[in-house]
Length: 162
Image 1 (cartoon, rainbow, N blue to C red):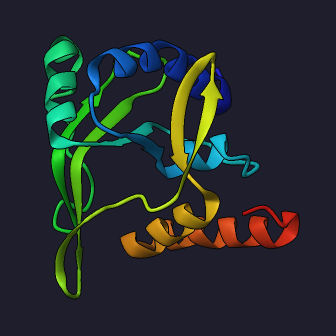
Image 2: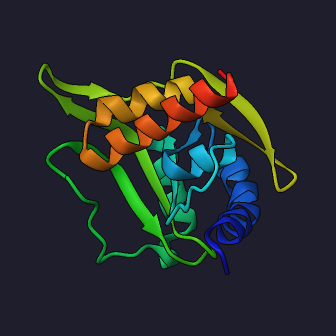
């Protein structure tokens, strides 16, 4: 299964449950959001979902038997959230409730300031706009995130899409 087909198959399974479980605004972020927003040649390895702490806890309750209890996210000193990785889908899903990012000014909650609705496998979902994804990757600041920000900037410049 290709990364793109695994992403869509994972979303087809996950989105109905997220719609039932989540009560607060939420977004698909990271590489999956880049792919869904049309950036070519992106191969996500998981589906990153930014949600409230309460929704992350609700999802952990619903999918408790599917939590990868051994997995630890990278850069735990840079990020903190109510986190769980679920592995029962065609592509793993990582829920990050109340994600905060450590910056030079201390911890800051990640806020999506501009987003767009998408129909994904017949279900509604939201992703940050490409300009907003660019801002978020710059905020994250890791080498891999800066490379993703550069890919988005090049794509926006080439395609003239906001």
